[in-house]
Figure 1 (tube, one colour):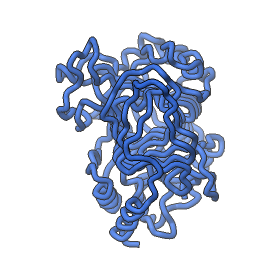
Figure 2 (cartoon, one colour):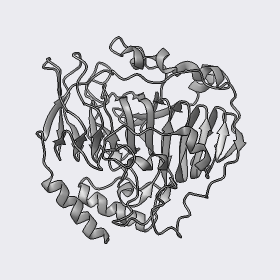
Figure 3 (spheres, helix red, strand yellow):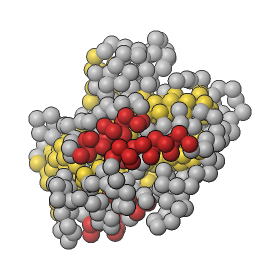
Figure 4 (spheres, helix red, strand yellow):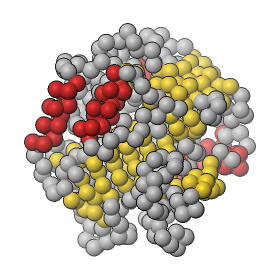
Length: 449
């Protein structure tokens, strides 16, 4: 099917879809009622390489004219009406917001597979939260808070409650909405990619298909991380820095991101208008342009400063606190412990000063993130952007951009020199190539039909 006709059909669908809630909805910063996995990490830090028999996947896809249903591989593919590329069609899937929506601007659709509701009575008045897309909720979408301290989320495409369709993940070969679960055991035999970068001591690390043990992979502008296809790490992963290539990293433990992760060839930003963004995404896929990375953790993903009080706050539920999530386990295996890990933190852009400051925060992650548990992190006096997407039950990512004692004026509306969006907000930006033929996190393919 021609790209233009497909886009017209998508736009038409959005225009006639029944909107079951107002485009101006209210939700409160909420805490979590979801339990996350935790446990001790393997003690070894040097990955051993294990072979697995599987066809080669990755960025060399010139010979692939159809999406590889059943092969779960990553790359650029030609999308046809009868063989859609099975990939997420949303910028974020979330069921429990915690404070993840504070100051958020989402460019793309949002999906939920459970009821979305408010779980906290104590928060501050905020505004300007916006979703440039539609919120597809498989169940109800409500606000239980009795307090008047709420923040308004503008959902430009409206909220569709009790939604059934392919805008949310479904149980394989059904139309029953469900949270997608990576089968890390079965995935091992399908790994066929390579991952290279620098280890904790700066020496070269190469992973082919599967690595056993906790792993550190970092890159620099001069020597970026190289990803080609899919690899599996049996343990925890520490990853940061520039990368090049297309592929996914599956991790059976936690993923720690102490600093920015950036694409060497970035395709962002996309146009604010979803229809125009789809057109750009289709052209990029046709030309096979840009890097793309998927990061999937069986447990949780922790971004920037691990010592932040968000994991210890009195309002944080027991299931999301430091001990329950096993956050500090990394100090037991990372060479040099907590002091050495702290050296991985980077300077982030102070929005008031306009300079890079040692704030132990982050500004930009260019990857599609998946966590079976939760995704948490903080960026102080600085805004952040995730270019790709997010799938998790619980989002607890904070960017302190509003007025406060330490930031009297709040962050300005000027564009960030790092992520290229106004600094008075935090962003999750959908990679529209994934609606046109790019696939990462291919192990989730059976949930998208």
